Length: 71
Image (cartoon, rainbow, N blue to C red; front, side, top):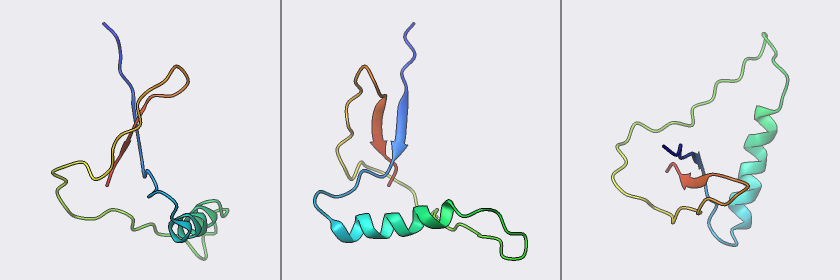
């Protein structure tokens, strides 16, 4: 039996500099060291039911698993 791996992440829209800039801002916040006086609370989940794919998955290769957008 072959194990299939799927990697979920946001596949950015093509040529969208604003999206990339906003994602970099978020990643900078995630990279900050823990500070008990100022905890960071991430609220990136939405209470919605996903019923279809919004972006085409990226096929698996020998070096990475299939990549599926989680939106």
